[in-house]
Image (cartoon, one colour):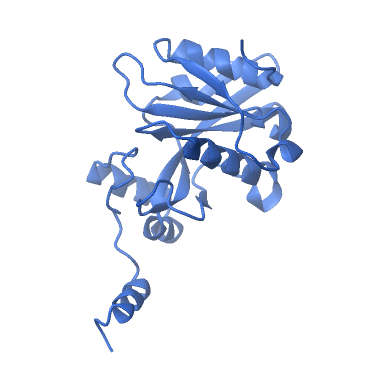
Length: 211
């Protein structure tokens, strides 16, 4: 039996089950920490790979109740190749950050520092808040009597890609990612943007490559 969920999380759970009928859905507790101080009743939905749909989905649940404005609010999905408690931590961290509100409130095109690689050995240590292109509006829009949830994608990106996004805009970065044909769930993927010159010079200097 599912644990007690906030009202919006019940609607989101049913929305996910309708959108992904062949995926098993588990309701997980959040990572340890102060998330319940900002988002009471917060959970993470984990959807296993289904028929014809690879990868795992981790979806925040209950964030809408704590952050909605006039019936509009966000939840977030993270797409991964393998299951891990680390992904629950990432979704929980992102929800805690967003629920602070003000300058921390997230929306389409924003970037979030993770503080470490999203998976061991990965160059991606930031998240880009993107449209859920892989699943379309059938995932993005969840409507119910009290309002609607917009589900946005947490796409892991590198620091250089984050810098490029702020310099050139979301569309330019997304075009780079599309042209490169990245696997967004691959922690070992290469950056589609070279490191900025200053960073490259510092790396070479540390390795003794330049004076």
